[in-house]
Image (cartoon, rainbow, N blue to C red; front, side, top):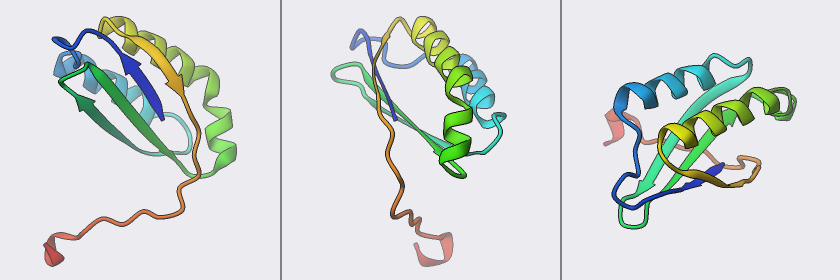
Length: 98
C-alpha cells in the first residue's frame, strides 16, 4: 500500500496519466490488481496493489519504486509511506448478490 500526500486541490493526476501508471503496474509479473482511493479533503491518495504471492511482490520492488516516483511527480505529490500487508480476506459482492 502506498500513501501519497499532496495539495488538497489536486489529489488526482488526470485520468490518462493515472491509467498509464495503472497499466505499468498491471504489466508487472505477478500483479493481480490495483485499488486506488483518494481523500479529496486532504489530498491523500492510497494505492493498494495485489500480488500473486510474496515472491512476486519482492520481485516488483525496483520497478514499483520507479512507478511510485513517477506517479508522485505527475500528481504534484510525495510518497509519504509504503507498507506491505498480507491479504487474509478478500470478498467482493457479485452482481447476482447485489
